[in-house]
Image (cartoon, rainbow over all chains, first blue to last red; front, side):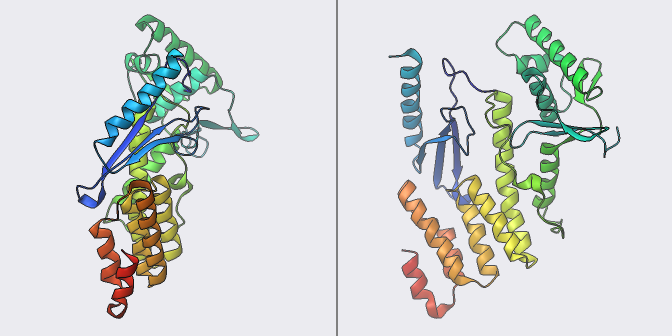
Length: 72
Length: 251
């Protein structure tokens, strides 16, 4: 169901290794402002080839979410 | 329930329910949300118990409240489409014969991924090329299933591209490969499928073009290059006399 924009957030983290190698890839996607599709209308929060960049991107997204949710 | 007259539940590209009546096929697009969620959940989860359903669909309320919401949703479903849901014991399920597009997609994908099953002579079914599961729904039970289906679609489309190319159906093969690319534009295995199809067709220029486009995309988005597996695919397949030119393109 559409998520109310007051207290809920969704962040999808796709991670994969290319071609049976150890080459890491990640894409972080959040629903668009209209609660739209994750692929078509979703917003790519970050793409990265670095595992270390994933938690950074999550923290950044979370900070943004909390700032919005609390109105601070 | 006769298969040809059975209701059809669509969950890919959004919720839809079609039933057969005296006037032909009717789309029931005014079902209450609770009824839609119950039908969708049963379409994905088979025959869960009432307690599990109530807990999944109404996770943030007390159990008795959730059970009440489930009874209400079930009543609305049975009123709108009598016989759609089979109630037996403490479990619920969609009635036998009810068609669900996700189940059709899963069956198709399993056939495609089975190396012993040859590609059929017909066109790629519509269900294989539909969009994501229940867009705009963010329940946990939807999110996890959506990602599972997304992965299944990517792998199936890549396998389909190879099977179609092996059968000499290059036009369909490249369409399947690009459908896999659209699912995740940075996924190299999908781009390798595109390159393999072009090479199988003997279209080296298109293969190199696909390779360089992916290399440029990867460079601009991630600041990295393709894997050695991707580069070798195209270098190995290129005529030796032009090896230098390909190497230049792969730099």
